[in-house]
Image 1: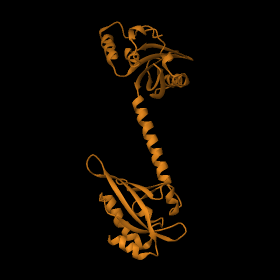
Image 2: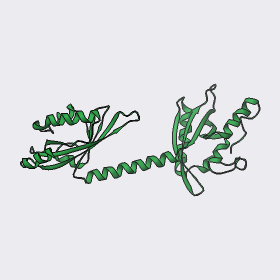
Image 3: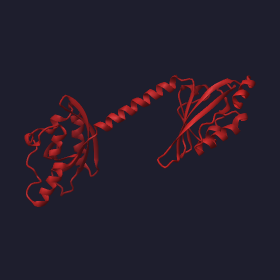
Image 4: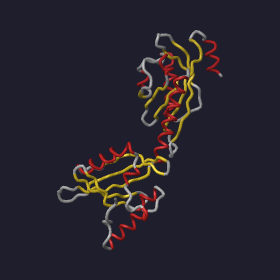
Length: 272
């Protein structure tokens, strides 16, 4: 049960209670003594987030709204907050009206003279939309990973301010001993020996274009394969800029063109 409203009694408390009434988040005051956690105050906004009338839920148990699998973790979070002076953050699920949402609690012990009872204040916010967005991004990343694993093309990305090249996909296993790794640009990747000596000038020119944010041009270069042979590739990339218009990232793709011995075809590509 919520117990007695600790904010009743004076003008300041009335002002605080008004603030709690219209706060977007929810505020909870608890007392932690040994294994017992007692809730002494719940802001009315908590019940509104569940579509309930605060005046009709004064004696409701807040823990009943918490997903059964997450109750122990929430209790542990309040005990950790009571045990030290650090701010404790914890995420958990709530269940109501046949739906499951997510909440984040930030709990902190209230400084006061040492005693058997520790008081903890906590602010609870609804993070359901954030969780759903994170899940959508995770699913998108997984789809992208699967797509790159199935492509024959070489996928790569450059963090332009950091000058870091990152490789993606299993296709790189044909020309590199490791995949999904980062190299400094331009020198770090050149030191792997993947770029043919004949194409180092082309590679450096492409790196200059990437770092300058100049996309659109095709770059033909020879790469040294894992078996020591050399093959021609054509690379293209697209630069993404930040809010100030500065080059931020380059997303590129390199495709196998033709084996090294077909010089006439490669020369035609370079002139095209």
